[in-house]
Length: 605
Image (cartoon, rainbow, N blue to C red):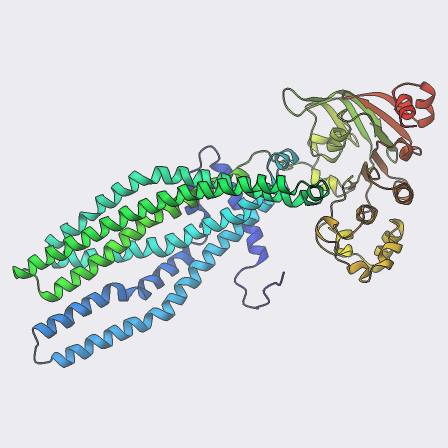
């Protein structure tokens, strides 16, 4: 994506980064009961000066709204009751009108400039805060919250909040200012007209009370359905190769059509309530305009006011009813915006956060792991680890084997720090994992997952992810160690080859080599292979296994494997069954024992 190169950039990444924690704090402090408008006001703390400037420029740029009716009334009175200096008075009116209109252009630009700086800074801060919080939330949170919903919240909901801010800063500000000035002029001129004007206020409040509850409810249901459909579309895109391979296109089409039909249904219901609301609003405001016309005409016939004042009051009343109508018209925007503020809170107010505050940072890592009677439960019913005891010495390669669901992946998640024991202890170099600053620890480990996780960049960018300042010499060594030389040589753009979404332009073996290169370049003290060769052909597996063997020398290594042939050279093998380590030893020791491991091996042969 092309970045802004203008030297007069309005925002800096440094400022946005500094703002992000404030938005998280706003939500966490109000997590018990989110009051959207109070939160919206809090978002702009630190930007009140910009908003004040914007309001000042708005007052100046909007002067024609209340000055031109006064000039029009003056001109009508001059025409109906001319004085000796009528032409001078008319020219003066034209001059004042011209100056007022001319001022509108520059001050409108200044008004937009300052409110835009505030609203866009808050928009970027909210999105940045959500990105920051998503990086802090637990893996369990991410497993439960679909990617499509997260994307919807980060992009669409924040955009809706920005739209609400724009509406309030333009429509609401204009209403307050112009109603105050207009009502002041009318009150100073004729109290009867002023009292008649006031009658439209309770009517507007009544309409709002009748419709607002249902509009909030329908906005909530529409937002939820949009999130659900967004998630379904995301899943559909991910599954297209599987769908096409199994000729399930029509099934997916019907499934997604049902989703978008429900979105249309919810949207139509929301549109209908908005339409009904708008119709009542329009009819009521025009009724009051007609009432004002007849009332001021009656006063003019009785010589209470002049013909020019009839025009003045009619113009002001049309303006006022227009603004009242605009305020009422804000209700749908307000309902959508407040619902989006609540939706954003599902991320920013979430408490499932990895807390590292005050914990000592690791400067070195030997790689000694001791599991002491470790139990882990995902919930009250799901007991995965049940008193696991296991010791891994620095530099050892330990393979975890066992049936699916035995607890191997849970052990790896504990080693990475994604989860902490429900009971018992996991000691890393003698320190309880609960007491360690996990980011500093993770900087010294690398993970090669079963499914290679690549992003839509180049091979170079994927290898050096998180390590931007890498010399060519180091990169060449890494490529050689990962057995990537022939792969890169075969590609026209070499290291600058685009890998496609999730590495779709590369083979499974090529993607896995890149994952291994990414692990090597970090020079980790501990490395984890989670079934890194399970989906590869035998030739590719052998080549990658050689790279793995080179990488694991003098490093503590955890290997999760189903193919037992790939762990022949592991220092120790831990057999995991029903959440416990039932066997632990070398290949030869376990084969000689003829226990669980022996049975697994015989079954595979």
